[in-house]
Length: 153
Image (cartoon, rainbow, N blue to C red):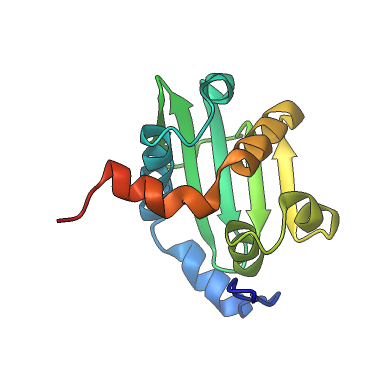
């Protein structure tokens, strides 16, 4: 029995991206960085991979929502970037459905990339490091790790 959701490929109406791009983008960066730093605190990412990210800048863009998260990795933490940061070392761009499929492990990054549902621009070696970091996360064990780090009650 498959308990994973089946997320279909979809694209939100263009109006959503137009409106979303006009909204402040800093909340996206803050939320993304907070989630990544939880992963750092829980030691989900290999230390040697994190060292490879040092002083790198990233952009994650959800094309059909107009949302963008800009951040860097410095001094052992992910940090949000605000305003126009110019070029980034690594850029991930996809529609909401592709990112959702990726996070739910319904699709892997290679499949999304080769089907042109995910674009990756910038430093190839850095992109491979990030991909391997995500692949190394033991997603089924994540709820147990969360309870260990933040016990409830």
